[in-house]
Length: 204
Ligand SMILES: [Zn+2]
Image (cartoon, rainbow, N blue to C red; front, side, top):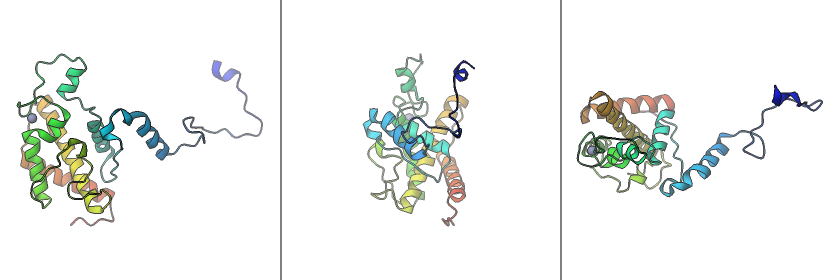
């Protein structure tokens, strides 16, 4: 009431919402994306772009965004933030400290799953060399604009998401899935999500 007490609407003007972050006062999601890129991402030079993939649910986009910004709560990240832990070793293989890169990319369990996924995709096992390039869909093509590389990018996102979900099940429920079972879930979920969101694609 204090804020509103001295406020008078100018005569004959319409009440309206204004988005004060842009001079135009109008809200556009593209402006918000640019603002997020410029304000949040420069601190992490290897992830200067926001990856977008409309074939998957938002939760996967958020997962990839957090993974690329080192914002997933793996043991090393918790340790850096002062959380008192018994161990920071990978709860799956116990061979190295648990970083995001290790969990999604270097762990023997992750490498085994990636090799199964790539074989299912019809290629012999090669893996990108840099973690920064994971989730860009560039493994079999130099651009991520074609339909096939967009589809592969989707598989990369679903595989990373399933690896993270499996890791959480190991930590919180002491339950680990096998590589073949996880591959099966990746196939089912990818098909379900892609076919729901991209009706023009025929995935038979
Ligand atoms: Zn491991």
